[in-house]
Image 1 (tube, rainbow, N blue to C red):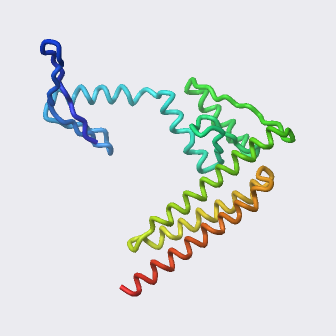
Image 2 (cartoon, helix red, strand yellow; image 1 turned 135 degrees about the vertical axis):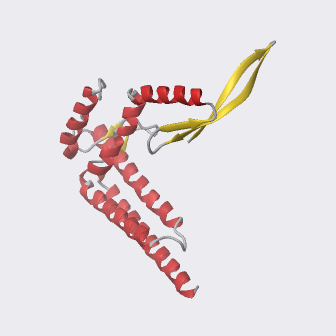
Length: 207
């Protein structure tokens, strides 16, 4: 990663900015190099200090990653920051909350009672929208496949679509009438993948 160091000076009523040097951060080991050794040393010290501090933004960026592997987050707001998590994952949320508390953070949790009209409707909308977003992402990925796409990429795409089909089935209790529509959408995405793979394969054979 490259960063420009700029010197600021005031001339009369105006400020002037001059490039001093470029600093290059090697992400593999954190080494910083630049045309001014003293400045590179100061940048290294600042980086070391920052690496020892975790901000709220850092934690917010880290938390969704384990959920992607072990649970599901369904956004309640378009801006994110507030999610519905199915009851089956409550033990996992307990572990996440314990982690957040150990870094002096807080995790707000509000149970949604099953059987309430507004609660059931809100959950249905959130889960359906989350699954629909997954399906759209599959379709966008398929559209970007080209002649240079590897067979392993096709296989991963098929696996992700199968995972989404399984999610639609496993979250049926939350989806209600949306389940059939989402199952049909997953089938369409799978069909688009098969068609695209066949199209690319024919193109390679004819080349």
